Amino acid sequence: MAKRRPNGDGMVRKSKGRWEGRIVVGHKENGDSIFRYVYAKTQKELTEKMHRKLNEYQGVELTEDSKMTLGCWLDVWLEKYMKNTIRPSTFDSYKHMIESYVKPNLGGKTIAFVNSNDIQKMYIKVKKEGRINYRPKVGKSLSDSTIVRLHNMLHKAMDDAVKEHLIPKNPTAGAKPPKKPKPELQILNEEQLERFMDAIKDDIMWHDLFYTELTTGLRRGELCGLKWTDFDEREGTLKINRSVSHDKKGGIVEGETKTGQGKRVIILPKSTVDLLKERKIKSHSEWIFENPLKPERPVSPCSAYNRMKVILKKANLPSIRFHDLRHTFATHALTSGVDAKTLSGILGHTNASFTLDTYTHVTTDMQKRASEIVDDFVANIFGEGLDLI
Image (cartoon, rainbow, N blue to C red; front, side, top):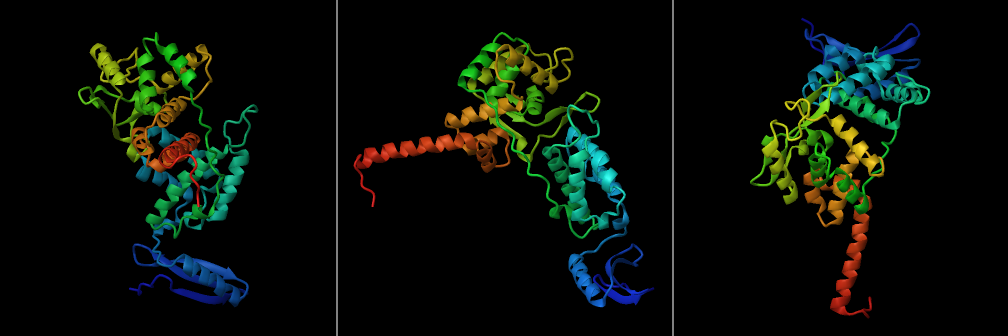
């Protein structure tokens, strides 16, 4: 049996008027070496390329599967790493991006040879002409947000390819997607919020759902996914355990919350506790907000969105997103004195700094008010005519 050659072992030779080098980068199951080849016109040029390759593959032990194509790996990755670990809607989104954008451009290339430049070119191309269902009014180019989502997905897939010893490093690290545009927060101010609350007052079917949303700031899927087992009326708490979303066929499926911190217990305002107690007495479903036609199923997130739009229009209010009701709750909570760490826990954010970054428009005003308060108590203690040295 031939002696197993160590990684990094190389050979240089001149063949047919050019210089050729090869490096051992891994081994097959039978122990045979896996090589990477480098070519150059001169020995000096080859030596420089070999040094770069040796650094690139230092400490790497690739497997025979490193010969698979990127498209083949992404199929394996979806089944092995993503299925049953992410929400169905996210899984469908990943599959769509892979089939529509990655495979047509890089799917046939061996994964070990995909580099940052390949990925950057793909981003440029799909941004310009990537839309599959092209409609003249919408345009053919993809939004920056879509490219960012594509990059984030591909980055995860290539990270896992590194762990599987298919590639030496993640090529997406050297590619630059567009900066993710920061969504403009729209909130209902106090006067608008009063009008919204007045508009839902006589809406028997939807009042409780929107009241709960505006007093908790839950994500839409979390709100629609609440069950009575999540509600502790004695303690006045609500467990956020799941999120519901639509699948490709239009059905509703249960899934995990958006983040690890999404699973949480929140203390409800007394008015919301009382409202849910009353609702529970009349309920014949396991869901707090059930589908009125199929009580065994939760209310549809799309139905909640559509109803909100009708209410906004009737009340002559801005046509905001459902997620902006969450922003409305958070903004008013901060301005009323709820600290960022507490609010972060209620919202299910990963940390308080994310909450502060999201609501900079509020915290800036709060800092101004804080400075005025400091001025007042300094004046009270030391007097108005304090000289600063």
